[in-house]
Image (cartoon, rainbow, N blue to C red; front, side, top):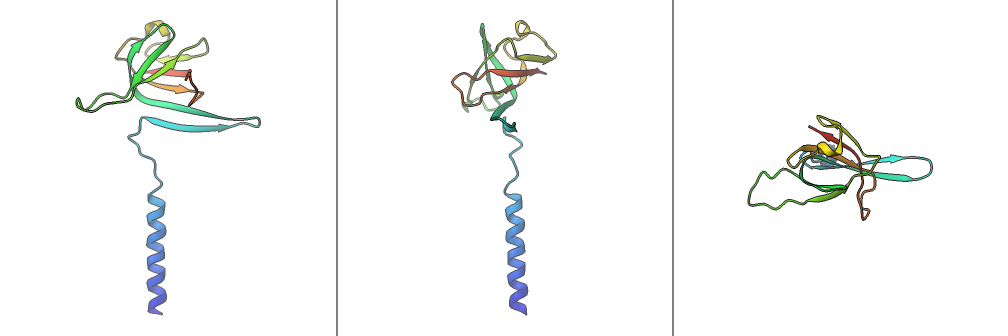
Length: 122
């Protein structure tokens, strides 16, 4: 009887530990979402809480805010097209400037050219 209770206790703790190990990291600046349609699976990528480093003619360069001056941070080139929606404190591409805090949703993750579906300016 004692042996059965001990085994049950060990299995319970193991199962509880497994459920906590699958929580997402909240500090991550990337969040992946999948939307399933009848014809295809499209992967969306959201760059959350990033800063615009550079505004080009048809694209922006974004990166996470630099909190550690000695660390290196990845930068991402995101293209803008006529279907890109800009909302928040600014509503036009021409209004975007270096240093703007934004979240960017792209609809073609992993493609050679990531095109922004929407940009939210804070």
